[in-house]
Amino acid sequence: MGDEIGQSKGFYYNIKTGQVEPEGVSKAKELLGPFATAEEAGNALEIIREREQRKDAEDAAWRDK
Image 1 (tube, rainbow, N blue to C red):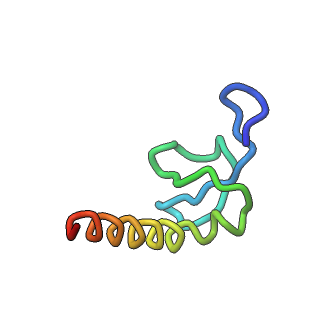
Image 2: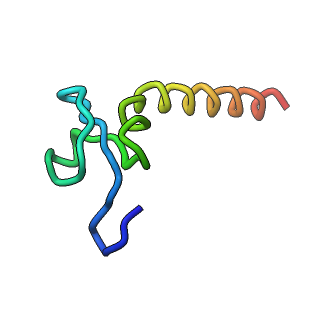
C-alpha cells in the first residue's frame, strides 16, 4: 500500500468519529486500517467482526480435535 517508507496510501476508519480518512488526519490509536479502498474502510467494523467470527470458529474446531 505504501510506496515510500512510512507513507501509506490506504484509507482508515476512525473509531472515534466513525469517518473514513486518509493517513495523517487523526492519531493512530483512533484508527483501524489501512484498507485498500475508502469503501473497505467504511466497512471496517463489519470486516473485523467477520474475521473474529472466523477465527473463533477455527479456534473452536482446533480445541474440539
